Image (tube, rainbow, N blue to C red; front, side, top):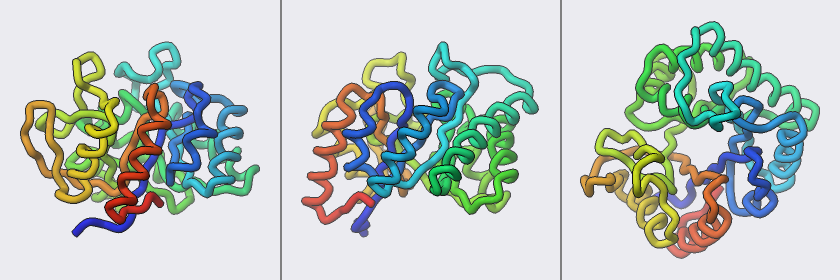
Length: 246
């Protein structure tokens, strides 16, 4: 059964500056909170835009590595990683309170997200951060991941996420950005990719294999050069199939 609505999320506050163009077309956002990008000013600016367009707000913490944009694994002690992630999320929550908004979810960024999908130690650190936050927040996780299983065992509410503008390997990990074909930039390709996941709960991997997948929210990266047009066109085509973005 095809749902009549889906959630589209975008990573924002990362220095691209396209948030005013993106916000009218999305339903949730993940705000960089100082680890790989972002600062107090950018967080506040994006929160105000999200408030204006009634977009759900999430924290987008990462490894503390602005030089590499949080896209390289860091071997950090668990205590240091916990302190970094919690500090990033707490900084965003503080501004949200000032702006009379609430945190809806947490979605790790880049290497932290990918590592938590397969590494129990890193996944547990993220789960422990969520336990310290006295808010009914959700965790965006990939289907059949390590962090998904730990979150479920710890009664952390999850939302399954898939990527509309990234290709998958056969094991449902994302194709490395170093590889050709890692990202999707074509409107037709992106629509077919996401519509298969929505309508058939499956994804066509980079090798052409069809693999089962679950997703309730779909990400398009805000730093994709064609992000605004991709999302606008996607919204139009989804509506033609009776699917709203909300």
